[in-house]
Length: 186
Length: 143
Image (tube, rainbow over all chains, first blue to last red; front, side, top):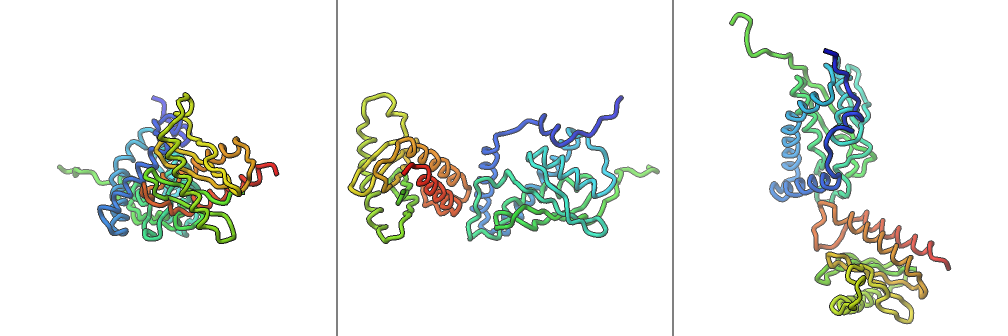
């Protein structure tokens, strides 16, 4: 059987099913709005969004691997590139750039110039502590955890707070060795 | 030159009111906007029996006075846009295109998840966009 060739983000994006961007944006806005009403505390909303993202991420990774034919990444740098170029393109239709590597290659920044989640959105003064797109950091964390990488994802820059781009810092905490559920001698 | 624009909700509650004059005749302009609401109500309740007016959002010249011309626009959700200008001979085409762009700006503003429908529009982006539209209206009109 011929080996499956990894597909580029554009190729995958061309083939996946898509929804109307405004429906997507407004749905996400409604979710965030409802969370604020329900939880009242901005910090709690951030946590909840992150948790929701995590739950999406641990499922999404399978779809991602199945549709993109990406092979095993040799190091974290390649992982970050794949997330930025293929992952973001496939699910959000945008690409991110990867910069700000630290010396040992365990931490980097994903920079999004545009973000379909935030069309129309303006953060009111009373919610300045809100990470509106916190769901994205949860998705990345959840997805990487399923491929045995413990990561910490934090927002560095946010256009809704007046910065010039969206910057997510992804930090590799540790690689969990794959464990088999059985032992050899059993 | 456009001196005042207003967005009025379906219960005639003001959603957005902005005047673009240096002098302090805000009150007078607001009064004009207020008066024109009656004209709109009149136009809506007693529609002319001709076909196209039913689906027409542009209400045309509402209220000519000595110094001002007041134009109105009614969306399908009964939100009214009112524009007061000092130009006494404005082309209909310009006013129509102004309202179309204004409508687009309004749609984006209410799509903000933090905007509560029926409450005042507090968005700064909307305010900036509206001033942009108002400014370009002045320049595109031949003197």
